[in-house]
Image (cartoon, rainbow, N blue to C red; front, side, top):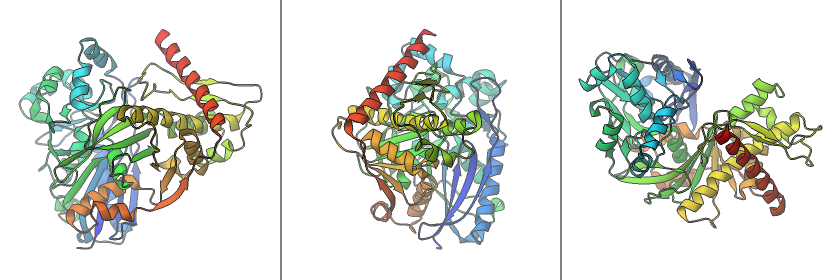
Amino acid sequence: MSGYILSIDQGTTSSRAIIFDGAMKMAGSAQAEITQYYPQPGWVEHDAAEIWQSVADTARKAIADAGLKPNDISAVGITNQRETAVVWDRRSGTPLHRAIVWQDRRTAEMCESLKADGYEKLFSAKTGLLLDPYFSGTKLRWLLDNVDGLREKAEAGEVCFGTIDSWLIYKLTGGRVHATDATNASRTLLYNIDDGAWDAELLGILGIPPAMLPEVKECADDFGRVDKALLGAELPILGVAGDQQAAAMGNACFEPGMMKSTYGTGCFALLNTGRDRVSSSNRMLTTIACRLDGETTYALEGSIFIAGAAVQWLRDGLGIIEQASEAGVLAAKADPGQQVYIVPAFTGLGAPYWDPAARGAIFGLTRNSGPAEFARAVLESVAYQTLDLLVAMKKDWGVNQLETVLRVDGGMAASDWTMQCLADMTGNPVDRSAIRETTALGAAWLAGSKAGIWPGRREFVQAWVCDRRFSPSMEEGERQGKIIGWKNAVSRMISDASVG
């Protein structure tokens, strides 16, 4: 076998296909943006048919870009935006509604109602998640309640539900396989992460017919073969993982205590807790990091809704930079005597606050505050929020005094200034991977290792290469002063949100 792997990385704003060679280096790639739909305030949708077409197109283009023929590809791996919900006709494969995106907040009232009925502890105990619109279970309930005839068709076994990975597997295999993996299943509010199965009690509470649900497989498993008519060869699909778990695997975070943080539109941090299923008392999420060779590895996860999106706001909303890459350069010019705080709660606050009503605010302005101070405050807000996650995770796991090395990826990781700020504010070393496409690499590793042509877990860990380590250099007194200011700013926003 050639060793070439096709990795499909279907994200929130675009679809990418990357070819990795036998040395785990990029050999070709293609990318296509996807349309964002906002039918009402707080609602976010995607066209599932457009997503599928973008994946098929980029896969073909990536193979061509690598100068390969379809038969040169040994296996396919898939990684995806996780909590986005899709329903489609089982026979025709036609989407029955636009996909409801993970960012969508339309089920906020439903979640509050379920909390009022006392269900959150039950859902959290079984799934490790909170009752929040972020997850796909309540999105599916909304679809069943609001799409004409959908419930009847679903109860008759005529409808498939899935996250984006399931949708792509179904389309790639010509409708022969309806499956997902354990990491994606663990983000639905429907999957019991202790039993490793869809939970009948939770399905009953949400009124979801079990016949809609995909089969749950391991992350490295047989997910069927790509229909020959699509790419020109029957390629085995051997690896699937949600994007954040795939990034953790791409960063070789296989050992308990290792943590990865991905900085894209938002920020998603995973702390590997090994076989320990750690229940959070600090409003972190307990999730499945991976399931391999019959063994489940768990993680604590924290989600920051706004990270790179705040840099986009500097560019598109305020117009103080022309390119996102300029933010760090501008931040370095900020007056060290000023301390401006920006709480970027544009769509509420994520972990550990989980306050969907909070909105963004700026504190500490003076007459001399300008673009440089704004840029620094935005980048610092990402570091502060990461610290909030790290502190909460360590408290949950009982390892508060242990140093944690953060392995980072995503667009913002390219900024040296931001990564040094992250090291300073968290007080921990930050390692940046030499391979920036770690999410796609994680999916490719799953497929390649399952095919037996890429190294196993131990060898992959040894092959991981650090581009640069950023070590903390800020004096502790200055660090603590900045952190106190951040906590004060956030507490004001939570108070304002609860009152208003």
